[in-house]
Length: 169
Image (cartoon, rainbow, N blue to C red; front, top):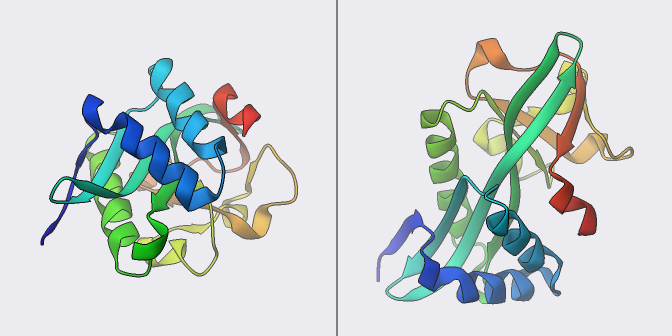
C-alpha cells in the first residue's frame, strides 16, 4: 500500500492521540496535541496513513523569538510520532519534509525543534546556539535546532518560547 501524508481530519483525532501515547509511552504528548488543537494553536497537523490506518503524526505550533532585534514569530515542530512497530521506514522523514513545505508556503520564517542531533540536521536544521538562539529551558543547547525558511527572517540571538500548553508536558 502507498503511504499518504495529509492534513488531520476530525475523524483522525482519537487515532492521533492513541498513536502519540504509544510512541511516547504515556499521555503527555497526546494531551499536548489536544490542548493545542482546543485553543486553535495547531496550524499544521499532518498524518501519515496507509489505507485507513494512521502510522504517523506531526504537529507544528507557534513559537515566539524574543531577540536582540525585537520579537519574531515562527513555528515549533513538536511532537512527531511514528507507530513503534513502523519506525525506521521513512514515515517520519515524509512527515517532516511535508510539514516543512507547508510551513514555508504559509510564510513562517523559521522552525525550531528539540530533537535528536543525528536526525534533524538532515532536514536542514542547525544548532540554534550557532545563531545565539536558545530555548527558554536551560540545558538543551545540544538538542535544540533551528531551520530558516526565509533566510532574511532567522532571529539572530534571543530566546525561543513555546506556547504555554507545553508547560504541562
